[in-house]
Length: 167
Length: 65
Figure 1: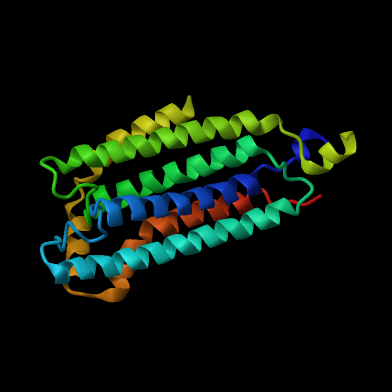
Figure 2: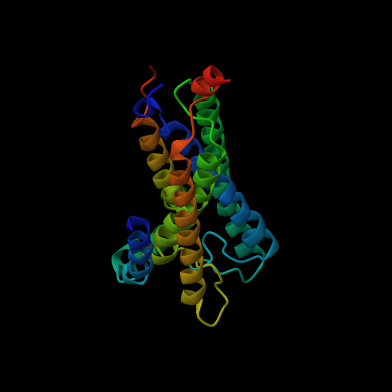
């Protein structure tokens, strides 16, 4: 199989969606639930009592339902990619796409929710929330960069059918 | 390197995006007016963007020999 007929897109797309979904779960478990910061509407409805906490919890739940759907979509794409003879089953490509997806999630969520809409900040109760927001974006951008580099390094990996032929 | 440029663009664009008071006011009005459909759209907006990027990436390379 010639290299120009090897398709990396389906595996990368699956990894990006799965990475974004799993990154969303890390966000929800570590920040929302354990650290109790970064709640979805906390810049508009600050968590000051049980009622405001429950309102934020409701919208956190809606967000995490969306994250679950994103993860399921990524799993579906991975299943389809795994059945294709022209898609390389490359660990580097997949892990890179997972990291890039997590980074993409942080960057997109940070820019839209924190900066443009101002729905919430990473640490609402800090003296300077912008510092936390920028650190969140920088972490996302770093993940995106490392992930993309890994995806590129997996470009030489062979497709499954080619590997079977050479065995 | 394109990724490095993207990283810097994101870091510089993020604080600049705060200069969109209209978006913030609209978002605040939607949330405080307790409009559930619009609030859900706001809350899920980042996920729509990521899903659209993933779907576009998948669709751009869908040829099966």
